[in-house]
Length: 354
Image 1 (tube, one colour):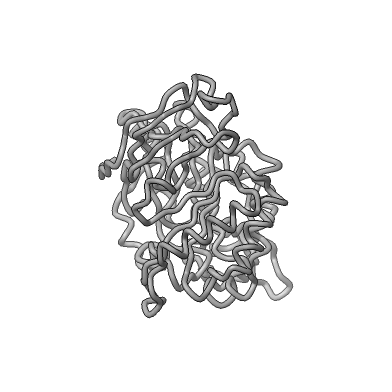
Image 2: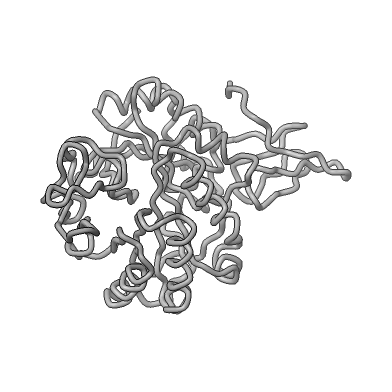
């Protein structure tokens, strides 16, 4: 039995129910599923059909989400379900996000069992990831509540494509969020994601200015699609102006996948250029991902240029912060959620059964 949650739906004059969880606003006849596939109309309700089932559970580094300023070096229990409310042609988890077969969900687990597993394995947090947790709202929220009762932190890895009516109920239970800002034009979102940009920007402003959730941003750079100097200047300028200079930004390298297999991989030079543009617009913490580049995976003090956190892959090899999370040299505070020292999970990847 799924615990009671708000019903995100409006009854239309033609008898259909409009799902109001996300901006897609699917209008459903009885037994019809939304584009996400996992939310289905059942009578006068819209139900999550995948509650309590996962595609599997993995313990991996928090930096893999990616989150570089949230308990660095710690381990996180990660899981997802099936379906998605976007249709990104470049999806790197398409086997789960675009699955229309519920038999991929072979790992049943209650929220309480997930929290207990995280505690047993000494994980600092639980992450809702792989497919967007917005669409499994009820399962994610109940799991987050169970985690907090066991002093386990919670992380949402999301595209931020959620309606205002659902934002507070979802994100109030999240301690950290990584938002996938896929590009910075409505045409990109429409043509490559079957979505829209503005709701994502609204979510980002809400997270940074109206919640306590630590927020970082990831943008996958796709050659010829969202990597022009003009678009990157607009994207990073918007972050600086609307969110502030201290929100970490991760530029990630694209590799051909799913329905975008003819595009070339992102070059290292393109990533470096993107970081240069972001720095020019005043962003203090810009990282490069999906490449081996320790120099641009490191956290540098923007005040005195001291290396604060050195990384090779997901392993921390340098730590020059005092017990208050400030630069050992100049005393500048490092924004984020930090402890007196870092974790030591490193590059490990461990599948578990619950």
